[in-house]
Image 1 (cartoon, helix red, strand yellow):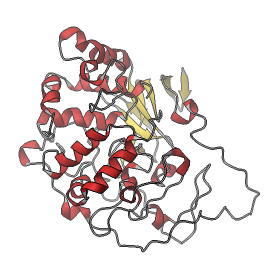
Image 2 (spheres, rainbow, N blue to C red; image 1 turned 45 degrees about the vertical axis):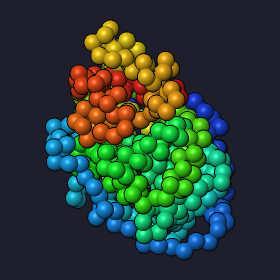
Image 3 (cartoon, rainbow, N blue to C red; image 1 turned 180 degrees about the vertical axis):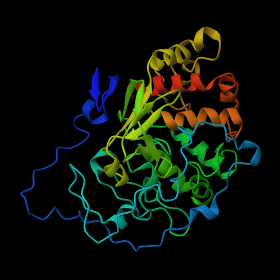
Image 4 (cartoon, helix red, strand yellow; image 1 turned 90 degrees about the vertical axis):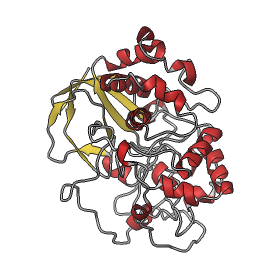
Length: 366
């Protein structure tokens, strides 16, 4: 048991860095007043303006827009005036612990030259589609999913996914068979990417991300009380005013370090607060189908939930996007190839079932 700011927590799974000490290199001490290490030399590339992907958005069809879906999974955009003001780019290089690289704030958000803080955490060389995209058509995959493919709660982790599965998702996006049940959620860039990426680039990206070794990056905590949060670009972050509230029937997933996550530091993980008892209940559903009430996830995703063939792994993945996929199958917003294999099993799942399922799946080792 651990008491933090009046919150009593049961820690179930350690943070990614704690379970894999080599994942986050130790920060080198720097003498006070010395200049941070310069940015590692990279091939010079022209700088392009960021495209307005919102005008290319292909949202869910009207019948798929379900306003009653849980906001913890479909986190809205930041309300006007509620977010923290962006720090202006003064040209100074920013740094993260353990990396010898440096990027300006503008470079950190440059989808045509994606920041890569830790090249040692993924295969090299990195395909052009991942770090640079194609100017005027789509930005590099690594901007949202990070060069490691770990992603964030507002998108999804794609590291270690089967090549065939990744390429099928490209096809489903391209052919309007995969949408979100809530407009402007998560897919505001994937659909135009799929429609503009070449088959060769698509395959290169899929093969690259499939080779990135999955590593534990979600710390799951069972609790009755959680920090108050607010939306921040479709991701929940702790409210600056502080305070706590009952968790209710929710999963609250927040960055371990908001500042570093906003800098796209791929060595920083997330903490997922889940209701007490949800992991054990989720294990029952996933492993036995609640003794036959619903289909057991292990039937298709494997006894260790690490996938079978082109069926994707679920163990240790971010709970927020996993919940969205279940709801998108339920509403029919996701109706691509092989969707019928999921639509039947998820039909009878309740909101509480889904909370329990993703709590258990996120708690597993990858």
